[in-house]
Image (cartoon, rainbow, N blue to C red; front, top):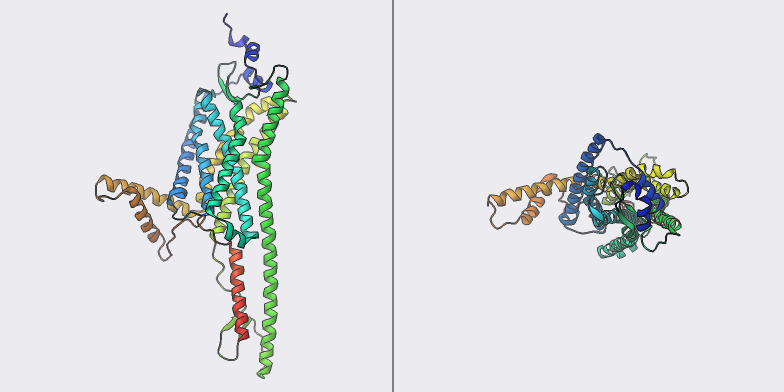
Length: 458
């Protein structure tokens, strides 16, 4: 006996039980504007292509163009890999929009697309928290960090982050399925009524599973990493302030000591002391000059400052892109108690998900803007590839591979890109594991102080 789609709602629920919230989405019919949907498909398609190309270039530069692997480059490389995987699934969502918001790609691709989305969410949060802790340890324990930090250790932390993300993604992979609406369109969404659910306990199990997943990803992929990030940078601020205060006190004490010694030397030489505006102390005999006036040149910009700037931008965009998604997930949980919120979730959650998908698209732009050498490396890499292809096609460089030509061309371009400046074998933003600038300045201060003390002793 045949049944029409409009009359089989209760029967389908008995054969394949669905959660009450999912049933509301199945029964709800949406009137889509064809022109608006076409514009969305075009915009989403362009964004998808740009996101894939951007992250591929970042992977190329960080993964293959750096001559020396560092801890910072390992963090960025794993972030770029996560973003690249996420952007690879964007064309699937474009196809979903093309078919008038109907998932025609079957259940396996539905599960894969969802899994990659959540893996990117958990990996990004984990790595940003790990980077913040790494920055904090560099400031709080510089000697320990210099001795213990290693590229191998960074890779182990990243592997732990990927494993952590895979474990937390498994429930979403398990409950993701394709469900047909009443208007024959297909929906790729989670159905928490699957697996070990009885009809009598259906609503309770759906509510518990929905609350568990929503709250767990809110805390594990958003709030806890934010607390770690905020705590790390607050601690860095306190440490820097204390070090500046101690440094100022030591300079003041040194000034008083040198001024008193200068007065004593002047009295013994029976020469009147004259006040001078600059605190420059010269010995009576020919000798080195002891000066407490600050040097005209400021401290050079450290690669760590550029990397910290880049991390700050990435964290800010991460919060702005993922906060609406988690807010709507919590609203979806409240729809179990206030059913009118279900319509709000059905409209707002796809928009929030699209905003979350923008995060991996925007990250490469942040890398390029916060670290200009990224742009230089990308431009040189593309130029080297095209020139190598042309040369090999014309057989003007016999026996020379593209990879060897790229290496030679890049080194030649780097030496000619900035005349008068030393060659840079790697990206300064992520290729240096040296101490932060304030630590370097403290070390430099201590060396100057020790040199002054030895000169006075002589």
